[in-house]
Length: 193
Image (cartoon, rainbow, N blue to C red; front, side, top):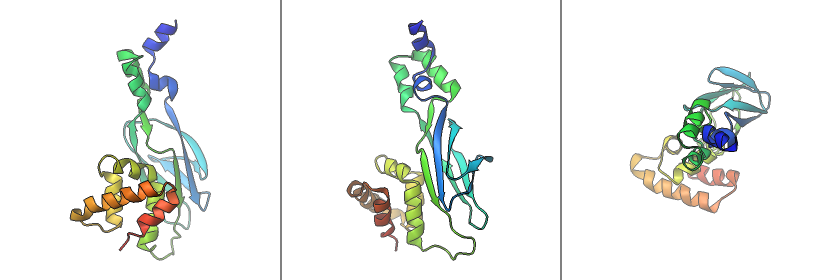
């Protein structure tokens, strides 16, 4: 019976399941959170989201504040590779069919909402908010190669294409020196021209 369970069930399905708990907080509280057009509740909220192969669009809205939209990035769940040892083809197909093959790169997001009538935030504040919100994805890309999060950060910092390699090194050095997310965000925001 135990052998059958291992053979016919995927590692990711057993260990992490079809859902992932993701927490959304905002300042101020009580902002509506929508995932791919589906309202899931108001901040602060921890919700069980179905694991999906594609990135999902998250919107945070509160009356009197500018809406915030970002992509909830999906990656391959590390437990899926346990199938190479334990579950074989059956385990891999189980994980793929249940959605357990995927995981979201971050499981906690915090947003500082901007009042509708507020003037545009200084560029450094916008950079700091972006870095805090996307910290995990940014630091992952620093260890691989610049992708959507670092490219968006470069845009906020007004980095020219020929400067990207230098800025990647600077930001990586700041990440290595500052393990505190807010401290790291402050240092990156200081790079704003």
